[in-house]
Image (cartoon, rainbow, N blue to C red; front, side, top):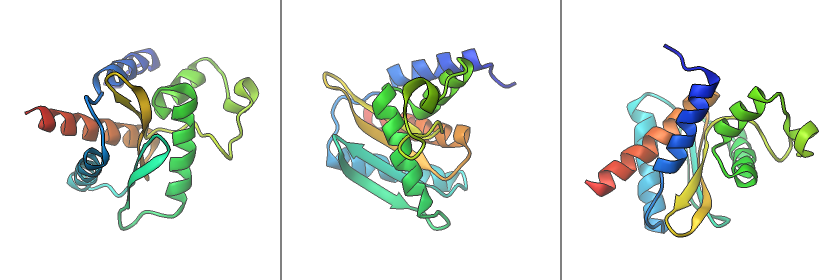
Length: 160
């Protein structure tokens, strides 16, 4: 059963509330990045993973079978998360449901921003949004599902 757009938007708001970190440093980024790569391998997917904190890229890995263009997609998705403070797929679905575009309604260039899934806000308790956790290489919903599943798995294992 597929979700309606409104149900999916509600689910994404809940994900953005739940998938938060107590602390986040370079070691956390490494371990999270490796978890995301493992999650992709486990599901037979090939992606590029980027984790950026306060403008500093802490993790980047391009799996075999990905392309240089994935890094440009990551950059544009990250810009979208930074501008709207929610996941890139959340923004894409929300603007689509409101018949809005980045260019016409926000004056944002397609060269710098994109409405595509896969970038998720890096939220830390007491600090708010400090960066992005991004996957690129799959269709929008799959990129989003992979990044959220990987973050959830990492947080569950860290708290176990």
